[in-house]
Structure formats: structure tokens, C-alpha cells
Length: 289
Image (cartoon, rainbow, N blue to C red):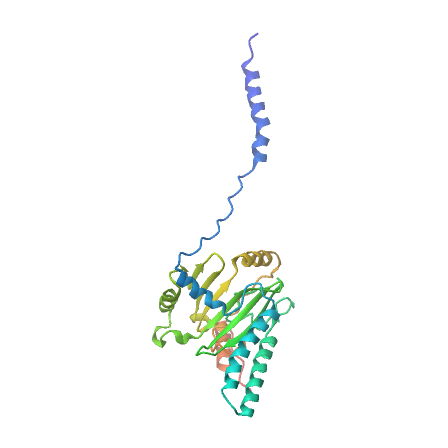
């Protein structure tokens, strides 16, 4: 019996219709996982130089362990000074200074889980932490051995995972305070890194390091060492828990922490405030009489 052309066409349309859902259900192909950044090729000497940024501290330390290592380092330094003098009053003063430094480090501890704004929200480390994500920080001066720098210890769920070191800008000549000179200085010490904007990154098999140019915003330079495995965990938690960051007025930021002071502060006088108000299209208040 001869099949009708009409029936054949209907059968073809039906078979296509039945196959359509399977194609829809298949959906898009899964995207391949992002590749892990490769370590930066470097000599053993350069890696050793980068490792010296740890300053005797280790990833995974608790706040109390960091303070204990700091106290041990202080003890060794002050003990040499105490032994170098026979003046009892001077020895007592050195011991008091040692206790004061330890106390200051202890009191610098801040948790970013309080639900309240932090004085560090607009500071040289403003991009290094988030709120309500299990993060906290200690901060100390390192001004021995000709250094004049600050070290910030960042903790995630109570464990040290990153250190941010604000450098003394005198490592560069005054007439060459720019990223090009900074990059040349850093790469001379640590070898070539991955350059992006005002940042240089080195990756090893056990830690990552960054050199950051903050000259325009804070008149400062910085180095960072961090645990890339912990960073992945921190970023995942921030993605789900951290509230949105609100950028402050850039003109206000330009007068904050310029002097790399002991604590974050806004160095604002009446002229600065008037300038900011005018920049926003307003008029400054009349002077008090």
C-alpha cells in the first residue's frame, strides 16, 4: 500500500517534536574549572628573599601565638640592650618599654565581626579585609634595625593567613617616588613578577606575594604575603556574607593616613572640609562669630 505524503510529513514533524525536549534538557555544557595560577619562575635566592617577609611568623598561627613570637623577638632584642648597660634605672626603663610594646600589640587587635564600622575602613589596608566574615587583625610598628614600617596580621577564623607590610617610602629616592622606580627596586630584590596596574605579584608553591603602589592614595608602598589556599576560602565567605563596600569620597580619602600615622585618622581642617563641600556642589557654612 502506498503511504500518503501527508502522513510521512506529519510523522517527520512528530519525531522532531519528540526529540526537542531532550535537546532542551541537555542544557549548556559545563564550563571548565578555572586554572590555578602557575608559580612565578624565580631563583632560589629570590624565593628566599621573599620568604624573609614572614619575619619569623607562620600561616596558621593564632593571635596568641603571634603575640608570643613577637614577645620572644622583643626579649632577645631588649636583653642585649639590658646587658649592654650597668645602669639599673636604664635597665628598668628598657624592661618597661618591652612590656609597653607587647601591650600595644595586644591592644591593637580588632575583630571585623562586630557589626560596626571600623576605623580601618578608610585606611591603607581598606582593601584587605571585609566585615562579618570571620576576619580580624593585629597591627604593630617595626622600627628596629633602621626600619620604619608597619606590619598588619590578618586572621580568618582565628588563623593567620596574610601579612600586609607598609614600607618606609625612603627606600626610593625623593625625586623618583613612582611605580616605575618601585617596580625596578622590587624586581631587583625578588625577580620579575606579574605586573597589573600598580601591583606586582609573585607566586610560589607555598605562598603568594604582592608589592602594591599606594603613592597616589596614601603616599605609601606596601608588600603582602598570603596563603593562596586560605584566600580562596576567604573570598568564598565574602561572596556570601560580606555586605557591599561603599567607597568613600575620594577627596576625603586623599587626606587620610597620608603621614602613615600610628592609627587611622582624618587630618581635616576647616579649609579641607570647605574644599570637599564645594566639590560636591554645596556651599560651606559661614564662619562662627
